[in-house]
Length: 332
Ligand code: TXA
Ligand code: MG
Image 1 (cartoon, helix red, strand yellow):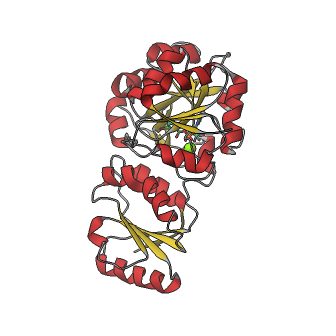
Image 2 (tube, rainbow, N blue to C red):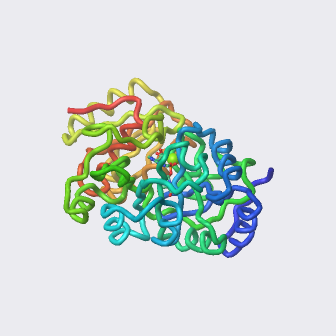
Image 3 (cartoon, protein in one colour):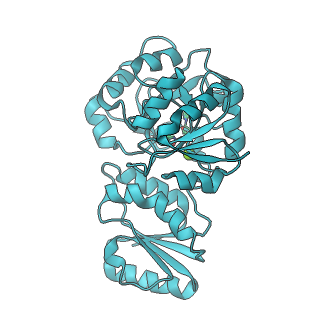
């Protein structure tokens, strides 16, 4: 199959493909998604095949609004979901709720629950609207690779495995949505994302538990290796600049082709390749995956990332993705 990158003005071709049971990639404000009609179980299975995704790792369903959510879920919305939807939709927030029985098992990874979000990206919204059905879509990368934030990244991973990639430019956020499980009693943060835990707790007026730490809840996808470029990633997670410099010197001896992903202030440091990721955490979130992919194209022996972990806002998500991508971490 030939894969064509479509300018978003030709989105109707992608809608027709979805209607006939094909999969297509499309931009969202977080990362690019690989979508299928969520009511079409056979089409959804094609997503797993194209990505090389384990069958027990369920998909996120994309809808326009709360009415779209209610078609996918059982019973009335719990308070937690109602508040989150009111505060953050459309936007990078996914809620997990008990699924309606007509949601295909492939979408749910055979769980009794379903994950749903309403994207704010105009191209994603138009796609759902013209299809007239919810769109099930995980990130449009091969399983284990960094999520794509540009049409070209999708092509790099999935060329020949789908008919169309709709080009909507750079995904503005750059990391995936925050996932909150509202299916039990207390809300649980399954995956940190652009919307931070601090803001969630403010909106909900109660503590949000962290998956794995103080609860058994989890997103099946979080157990797999993720977000890794081809070259090993070494994360230098330190405040002290002198010690960061020393750590880099050690790595440069160890790897003759070392690439560096760091705030622009590190550009003076000589490595085989350098990419700036900005000085603040929002810029880092936006540029992290694109940076991995760009440096990987220079075929380094290793990629060193200089960034000090933060807890607030999107900081938790950046630390989570970096922690998963890194084979090694250097800390104080
Ligand atoms: O921003 C995003 O969320 C992007 C865009 C395309 O919307 N999507 C995305 O999907 O990142 P991805 O590839 O991360 O896969 C969905 C994640 C997995 O970690 C999966 O385990 C979790 O959501 N998930 C899906 N359904 C779930 C459920 N019923 N219960 C718990 N976790 C679920
Ligand atoms: Mg993914």
